[in-house]
Length: 269
Image (tube, rainbow, N blue to C red):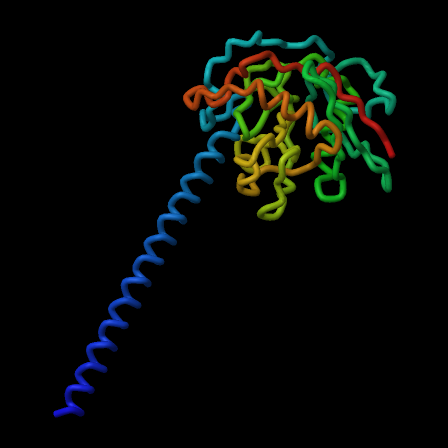
């Protein structure tokens, strides 16, 4: 009888341990599922936010939100036919539209950076032509054509992104051409990353965004990463972020204050 009693105790203990193990497994599974749902929802949400609509694209973005900013169309030439490479010193006549994407205007072995002057201060971007040659070539060409000068950043979302590069300040403007994606690896975005906004695969134009906070760091790698802020990360970038529109329904449009890109100057190193 003693042996039977001990065996029953062992069996009861084993069943109890099995039950506890199953309970713990179920709790862990529920937690994993909950985290996965949250991550998926966040990815879907931020992906939807960064899409931009240009021209006659289908309304798949939030850029249809009315903007109270001046719809600023800065004067400039319309370049038809092949796009010539602009003067290296930035003295080419300002151009506002292009029939075709530019040829390769970058010199092999040359490092490029951009000094962006805004009404909130300056910041410097180290441009990465090794991993994103198409994006850097387009950005450098547009900058040397003074395309970005005196344009407004039309969207600013707190601790997320500030979006610029549309001379119409409506969220639907672009240079008239598009180029293919050069996507980063998962987890490469950091605060100060400069990436192309888009309205789907291979629809890059002139609109770009600056990651200003931790929410932007979590973006999926669906946006061409072509530069990193090196100077102004502790001054100008926070100042741009401070002007962001905190109303979730507004989706950052318009910023609380006018954010103007006064000029973009390209430096060769």
